[in-house]
Image 1 (cartoon, rainbow over the protein chains, first blue to last red):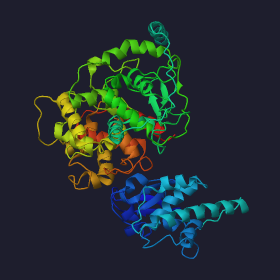
Image 2 (cartoon, helix red, strand yellow; image 1 turned 90 degrees about the vertical axis):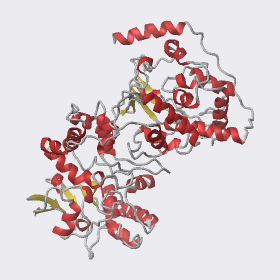
Image 3 (spheres, helix red, strand yellow; image 1 turned 180 degrees about the vertical axis):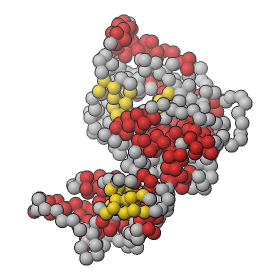
Image 4 (tube, helix red, strand yellow; image 1 turned 120 degrees about the horizontal axis):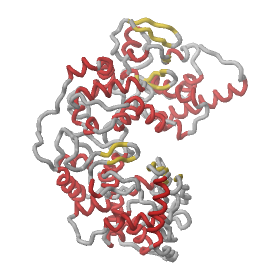
Amino acid sequence: MITLNVNGRSRDVDDAPNTPLLYVLRDTLELNGAKFGCGLGQCGACTVVVDGKPVFSCLTPIAILQGRKITTLEGLGTEDAPSPLQRAFIEEQAAQCGYCIPGMIMRAHALLTGNAAPTDAEIREHMNANLCRCGTHMRILQAIKRAARGMQAADARAPAQEVRP
Amino acid sequence: MAFSLLLVVVLGAGALFFVAHVAMPEDRGQHVFAPDLVRRGGELAALGYCASCHTAEKGQPFAGGRPLATPFGTIFGTNITPDPESGIGLYSPAAFARAMREGIDRVGRDLYPVFPYNHFTRLEDKDIDALYAFLMTRAAVAAQNRANQLAFPYNIRPLLAGWKLLYLDKFRVTERPDLGRYLVEGLSHCGACHTPRDRLGAEIASQHFDGGEAEDWWAPPLNANSPSPVPWTEESLFNYLRSWDAEHGGAIGPMAQVVAGLASVPEQDVRAIAAYIGSTMAKQGESDGPVEDNQTQAMQAHPQGAELYAGICATCHETGGHVPFTVASLGQHTSLYAPDPRNMIHVVLEGAHPPEGTVGAVMPAFADALSDEQIAEIIAYLRARFSGGAQWENVEDEIARIRRRTSP
């Protein structure tokens, strides 16, 4: 039995310790945001955030995740109440087929959590690990910039208040 | 400190033998270069990896600014674009040749030997002319050189005259060797990283190609002392230097830039380098068999490392080489048999990312996913499995040190 902290909740799972987090998220916990792309850590579709850093969940066995904070797409917002970052992706229509988008959003989330006002170069550098085969990279970059602007504006309006879904 | 004082005395005495170097006149004339000369100069610049020190990470080509960590402090690669103020735009052909062969800049200052003029001193006139033609036809970039960060007494440039008196002459040769030797010992300056250096930063001639270091990576021996379990042949060296070799894998770390440069030069130049290095690496009694793999014993000795390896690494590295740019067995990589774990640690922390515009192994960085202890477990497992049980010491401390250094 391994206890995982997923989106702020404690979850006990019986999967083998070397099972990739991605399989546990999708098959055991039924959190289907993270996607299986290449299974080799080369495409980024499976990206989730662990202790504030983006990791490839397809290459992360649950054995190394005891006591660490895992955040998945489901931890950001819901269909009815998307997070500012998710809203920015919708407003920029950044998805074409959409398969890479959960990974893109999670990698961008890790960036904006540590750096609320990234430069274009910083965004490109940070997002380099995630691939989009439809080619909507330009809209994805726009969405991240829109989210950063929105978050800064929100911070300026209400510095003391933070809304958590 | 006693060593430093001795150093000042010795090098200072040496420096006294030299008259201050004269400044070469400014060259503001218009030069016209034959296209073929510029083209060959570009190939030679790739064979000499000029860009690997003279171009900053994501910086303008040849505009300098790259920090080079040396045991004496940090030296910054200089701007060698033809900008007249901040670059080498005022260098005449004679001033350029003097800088290349004697390590003296246009105004007469001695240059630090991190610029490998001890190798370039062997270059023929026609090749220096071609390099000059190539560099002077690059886009001029106005970028001031950054001040070096060197401790006393290494920050006293005139002492370098003493250094040259001690070391530079030994490298001068007059006979024309074959192309491979000419490139390896001259322009391509392989010994600058692959030969150990003494306390004054000079390559130790008696330990030629015994292995050295580059930017905190281990640079393996290029002679019979290579610990590689798979023989390096002329053919495998050519494959490795050109792109990737199925027997040994591909270049990463500082060597990746070298291979990226060699991908674009004429094949005969790389063949010549491979032939010469093949001759320096030749040794007797090597087997062509599979590498020794003590998987069962290693799993018993390091169960946690084995578990982590199975969950993380095996996806790509246990496919028998079917994932593109993986070798059949990790045991074929020379770095597993290195005297220290630095290369292994760099790879796990930073991953492998082919330089812009090149094709090669892609491996994710694991710095954010794995703790120092977990990486040390994986390394211990792999060492037990492939290197006959010999373990590196202080692996966790080294991981912590390299982590601090690469992600400040």
